[in-house]
Image (cartoon, rainbow, N blue to C red):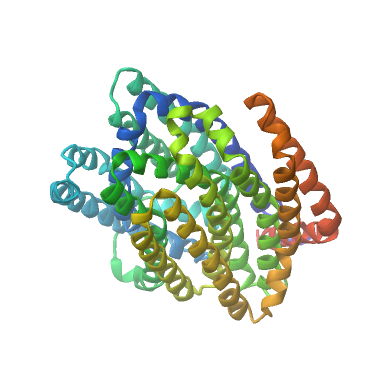
Length: 496
């Protein structure tokens, strides 16, 4: 074996296996969050939960700006210099620090506008998150570029358990809304410390913004796309809270958090895998084509996520009562509608990863902004009709955005739209069969004790869905996995 073909220490399966490890870590994190969620929900209560949900969108808005889009831009650069990485480290850190100070200045006017006197202090307490996020940008880019997703997996586990313990301790001592703020602070502190140290980022006293001008141009579109995504997923909280009050916002925020869990488990790791694989495919013509990776990613994501959201929408009532308690039954109808939105979010995330990997950040910017503005407008018009109407509106807008993404993505890949839509067919047929089976059998399992009935519904739905998908997508599933394996093999063929 020649030096030119010898695999380096990265190893062929690094990207795919790293994404699987990250998904597994997210699954463990989900189990920990689900175990903690009912406890915190009972200790904190809907009102304080809604108060934190008013503060977090503002903090997350600033956090979306914290790295100036430099993390994604630097991750696409195959061999950046140490000086460039140091420049991004200090430049993104300065952006995050500046935003933290601006957030502190805007806290009191925002609290007065929302008529929430406790809101400003919560924003001040959460502002260090922006500093930590900015200084983590360069380390994130190095980990993504090297496809060492196990670093993120370990960081997620460490930060989840540490922040969960801190939140539970604070809640037991009666800290109320501040227990959730402490959870976020500990979470981001652990992530920063772990990712920066594990990335082996060489930090020097070097910062020349002129060296990062091309990154800033790419990052501007990436940043705009992130802001559009923020509009779609956070400003609705502000509208609901300002119109319907903190209690209704607590119900809405809890339902939204639940439907985001499957997306974070699967789509988050898959996003990193797709982004890095497509970015390499655009520069290595001997590997799998970007359209192959895109089709495989859409099919795999849809197959895995469809049963989760279909099942959640149907069993939302008994699941909420059993897990969260009767005080959260006000979130059931909204959760049912938002389950459809959860699937749309996941498909949009996969399409966004492909567009960013192709370097078409301007397309992702336009799509994210259009989706965000449509979501905000829809929520503003429907909020007067109640939470269920808001959930239905978000679901319709998100599914329409996912369909539009397919058209835009097909044009960017120079592929027919039907080839992308056909990748979703096995999951769609399986979801329809699963939903029909659950609805027909609902009189049976709904009459059983809650835990037993819920377990029976999950098992029967999974059996029906698995049988249909195995029949329709067995061969294509194997080909999809081979496409990602080839992408990893191409990465391994680098000069030692």
